[in-house]
Image (cartoon, rainbow, N blue to C red; front, side):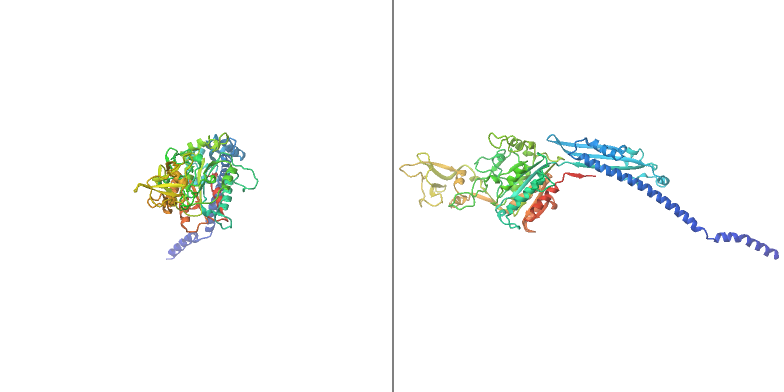
Length: 583
């Protein structure tokens, strides 16, 4: 028993140190602290590696951005690739330049578009990152997707943890220096009314349009009248002025280039078919119907003067102008009068940007403005315009402005455009024109009514023959053509004869809105930029809706009043940008 107690006590003494060792918690925090310290050192090391990486990448990226912007500039006379390399050399990064690509397109024997792209790469020796090689076998953790192949090309092995690749890519392009612009401007009667400034709308339009021309053709960085010299190179920006009211006068020189009908040569407008508004093109080969030269407005007793196709020279289209002072003169001449045909203005504005007009421009670029003049109708620098669609150095833009809605557009019925009419006159025996007595034929009766120039009866009964001035010394009768009738009388005079149908019809607001929508769609389908301006039109009005829908996007539509019209034109000018960083 005693022995057993001694043995057990001895075993207990031997086990005590083990129990104390087992239960002793001193020193555990030291171990944890050591582990935490290692982790902190490792994390700090990784941070240092990545800070070094980001510093190198940012330095290369900034150098690449500056280099491509300088090399892309169309004003740069040095070789673009040499410019890029020079930037990297001066930054101490010359050995890191990789592939440099340069794309150029020329117009009028000068560079009109340039795109420069550079890839730069370097390798950095990380300090702590190789420790992770056993943990992270996929190098893609540290290389952005899409750059693996470039990294492999530049560093040899994109998955080597002992070499961290640094890759920068930058690209810039400059172009769009050859601009083709159509200014389609409302000169209807309402433009003569007062604007919010107290001055007439046409006054505010003239001022704003000239400011726009200054920014486009002279100097985009100064205001008109600042006295600063023009910086825009001649031959780079063409501006066509398209004034519209009830009709658009193409003018004699422009219309002579088209296959237009020849009923008369008193005015120079076209009656387009509905299908013409579904295409931007206006081929010089397709036959166009000349607008009748007639007055649907004045009374039967008045002489015609309010023509559907107005004849004032300032109303004629001024195609592809180059000199800003010449454009200012054309804009200053604008006045107001007539109905509103936004659709016809849009048709001509778009056609002057379509490549089918190239032959027209070529001919007018070789046509003197007058006999013996050395000045051509269109500057020869624009020969070859309008450019084909899709040229990277070219932008086509329409600025369409109105202060209202489409109104009636009058046109002659086909039977009354040309050919012999139902009206007869006579010449005296000496060959001079007869007195103002006219014979109007009634086919059903096979008789004539003798009337004066007011349409009043000279005799109250029907006559069997044409009036020729009496029986004692009769003149020679002749049948007037319809163009002769409309040159002498209004359609109201003609329509007053009850046995004759009305000679003219009119396209109304609904038809013209549909045609305008089709024309806007056709232009946008060709990537023509369409900017629209509703000048003092009511918010939420039909005019706003039509113009908003016509614009390329909601951001291309502007509401304006007399106070901010110049600002709106300025915003449009600014939006036609010429330089952008693309990557």
